[in-house]
Length: 89
Ligand SMILES: [Zn+2]
Image 1: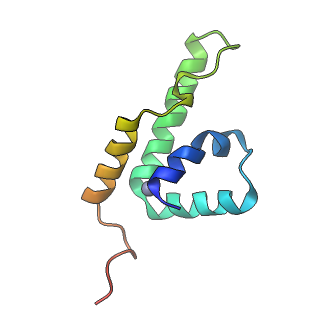
Image 2 (image 1 turned 180 degrees about the horizontal axis):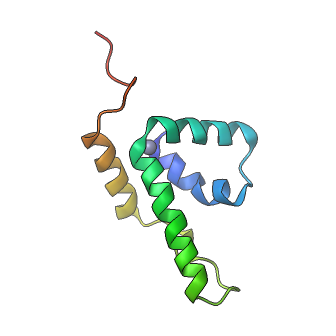
């Protein structure tokens, strides 16, 4: 799983509808990728806020993640070295 597919699966993961093996991949990626962990935290915070002030019948506004948000996560990931993911010497 990469950052892009993690974001694609974010809604299903959060709703608990993701198949078990994908859920495990998702959890694993979160452990290895701090920017995505932060993204998930921000996403949940935004959903919470959205639910507080919107009609409960409406879907959360972040259901569709904008492309620039994805790019921001990918950029943050590039800037941050991931432990255990360095090229072998
Ligand atoms: Zn990631």
